[in-house]
Length: 362
Image (tube, rainbow, N blue to C red; front, side):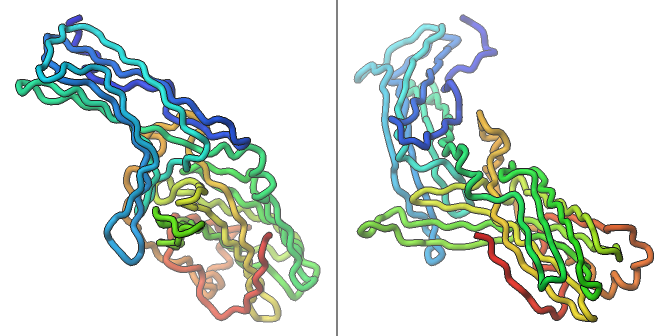
């Protein structure tokens, strides 16, 4: 076959993403083929395929990377021994499969650590030709199933000093990278001296990396950090007792990654909601944390382009939202709500002296 439009050397998988079972089955079977389509005679010494699973991490105390091999397997499809052998132009196909037990940690990739599974194929040729190579990554994911509904709430109700009822709702407990989380606030004031003036929400990502080396029955934490990855807020201008407010916060497609939990890596996300209340001339604040689950862009067949985890761009700092003084001076120009959405801010808006009441969600 003299066609030059087909790849000369390529790994082809049935699919690139596999989901582990929650019930502890025998694992997932990864199947594929190595396609070799030379368009001319070529001398080959050996054709082989290697599958590797690896955990790599960098601690906060050492810039050097530490890594652990999770799995390694090799297939040799052709071997000419000491002398290379001429292979005629044509189409050659080498099938393979490997079983990955449910004990293997799911795939993830961060700035300071990763769990990756990858096929690497090589055709070793004579000195007249360069070796032929190809790589293909496999993404192993945890099938979260219905248990996510028991962990992540979609609605929260709070009462503040018998003067204000607050109800917060989100449409789901799972959100994709790059999507928007709409938070619907409903407030009812039972005391005329209290009024909601601002609702805001910050999205934070929490990352824990553990040592590749186990000490006894545990793995020490080598990196524990959190960062702000998104923010949105809305001023509240209505004077009556009832108000509906919508705040939309964007989940970055590149600056954060999806939730993950295994013996090496833990990635989680939480919405930090703040409701600012004006009462008798003073501003008081209620803080409400709300965990959410962030998942990859698609529920199946995740390729590298869809995951968009190859590179973490730099942060762009933006200005904080306006102060209460600015809002007060321009209040006559506001309608019901003046909504602002930003991707990232250096600090929680706005800055003033407040009394805080922290409410935890269990």
